[in-house]
Length: 263
Image (cartoon, rainbow, N blue to C red):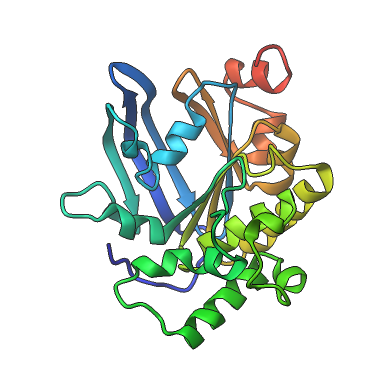
């Protein structure tokens, strides 16, 4: 899937869903969700466990369909092009829309360098070693990990701490220079100091890309996001600028959740 590479223009719609519905067999996990993600903005996705947050996120780069007996209806548009259109290669989609998961997932048999460069192996034109080294360094710099690992790039990724492993996974996603970065509870398994580093990284990365982050931590959503979307029982209940949603929610269900009356 080829998309036009443009200089970021904050506020321009980069990714959007139109009546997105996701199912596991006959069970509807997400129903008719329409949401815009804009350039150089962070959108937080909140809601109680089992409300469809992670399923919705996985639909945004076609990972949901990798699970047997699943189905996606509706549209996901990246720069106006439907990533579910016939003939679109899911692997190409994931180069433009990267994803990082709740638990760090470094490839255990690969070195730090090899982990970052893993996504380049499926490129239509694979970079040579010198170009790969430059891409790896840039990705590690952008993920705030370069200074910590530059002298041991050939070491196993499993020798890194949990927080470092998560930033390594972010570097791996950044190596293909995506327009959109999806983060599925990226700090849930990290200690407070490592979580803070990831939040600071999100703040820096938003300067030149679109970010969507699923989080159970409403304080985190308030700290890192420009826009917050609230899901409940598979329904997108409300979406608004973060400050507005947390101070003056329009839907009573949103207010009940953020004030701790359920969830």
